[in-house]
Image (cartoon, rainbow, N blue to C red; front, side):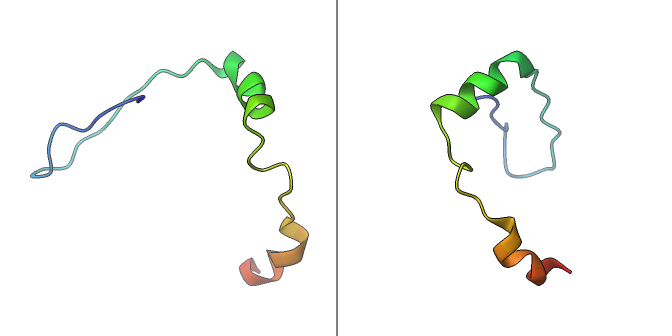
Length: 46
């Protein structure tokens, strides 16, 4: 877990520091978006 909110009774700002150097390795280890095809459904967002 990166961050956890304190409660539900009032709005909060959550601040977390991320190590961007780990992003490339995480994308290799967990290729969720590898088969993404935005060209197929981009018409919905025009």
